Length: 441
Image (tube, rainbow, N blue to C red):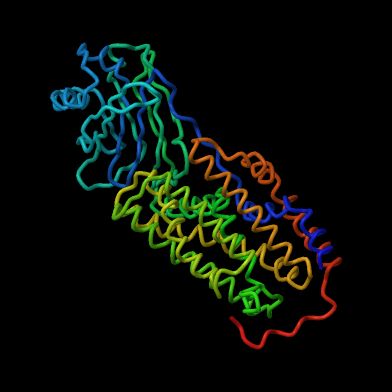
């Protein structure tokens, strides 16, 4: 057995292929970077009945446009807030094909550091009663530009629900104003609420496909599906294989438990009922992988994978909610987005399970499977530890380049995984199936 374990531990890096099998679904989307330093950023969100515009106004540009050298002090800004917003509303307008929309300040101006520079950030909601936004949208942004034409204003689209423009990551830069140009038109193709729903379903699938941490957590839980924890002289231990139907049932329960957990916090955080700091959540996601890895190596308790999936699913759901919050959707759109995003997540998880579970069942009939589980656990612990270090140091994980390379060639990577499982099974397969334990833990 020791020689088998030794041979099985050699292909440790290959297990990383497992967590990227779901990348067969869709390729990652490319996003634009944030606006450069020394410029103004305008972030536009098109909701079904309103256009929300967030302005990140460089302080130097503000001084040039108003002639008022305000100190970088929130109290001083509050004192001139009403006059400032009146000034801005007279110089920034939004219209659609039906009419010019009326602006309403929903976030008063406040000082923030943007691109390491002092900036005044405020948000205005443009609407025409309760009617839906129709046709193309034109932003007329003359503030600062009417005094300093050389100033550059980068306009980015956060999301447009009815046009199906819902993406994760940095908002897409759609134009740059300046040099005498103060208008920007957002062309839209047959706006329809269903486009937003299908776009957010795709977004949920992409989030799993691109989410190495979520995939690794799921893979580390599924790797024990073809085994069962039984109590021996030295405590709980894994034994395999188990009947295929029981394996499928266990995998279904694992995914269902994970789904139930992350759906709860996805909804609560997205709707603003609860909130958590980002860094602790990211660290807890990595911790969840370590706990699942330990359980994959040495069972912590009977059916512990279900408890781990459900409890830490709450943590992963909090991380998922960040994507919904970043879209800046209206309340009704947010409810639909939660359902669509969760549906996309589940579809991606099911695809990953369909791709991987048959291989795990196959390999569970080989003596190398125990070493394969340990290899999975080892890679998971190393990757999660690297993520924790990356979060604490505000840097990417040291292993991310390796994961990126595997993700570039998903078909080849999956083929290699199939080949690996085939070889391990052929070399270490059991001559006959062991007797199923009399008592299941």
